[in-house]
Amino acid sequence: MDLEKLVVALGISIFLALFLSQTVSFIYKPPISSLSIGASSAGNTLMTYSLVTMVIYGLLGILFIVLGLLFIKLRSIGSGFILGGTYIAAYGSLLGGFGSLLTSLSSGSLFGGSSSGLSTALDIVKIFIYLTCLLLLIFLGYSKVEKEKVPGKYVQNSM
Image (cartoon, rainbow, N blue to C red; front, side, top):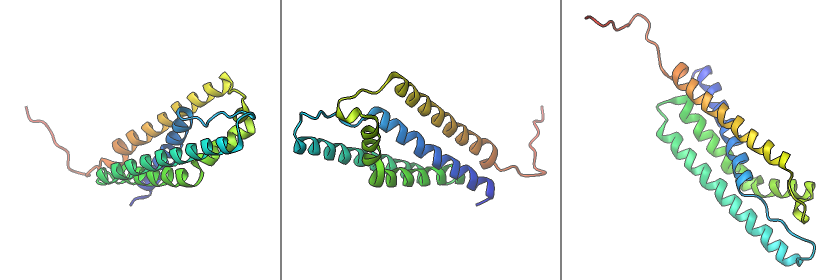
């Protein structure tokens, strides 16, 4: 693989993983508990959340690995999807549920606090930035890197 295809593949994989993780954490928020709920009930809720989050990230990872295999002729895009799917599946199995829970603990929202409007706006901005970078990399990877230019072979229309 050429260096430019490798760089595009790495960029696609990184922004794909960032976009998917930010989107999932924005849509599927950790449960809000209160101190009045029993410890076993809160623990079950958190375990259910962690399990569902891990399954979501795992399925998204598998989906993008399969998409990467379908686009493998476009080396940089296919490789980027495969690597991004691998990242997101690994993120889901290792850090998905625990990362969101730690964020909730540090912000106080796990114990009845609420997230601010500024935090929600920041999440939406991050999602759009990641999506824009991802789409730009796919477009540039296809239009500039994947389309091979054959020197000396130009087709002229004879009208």
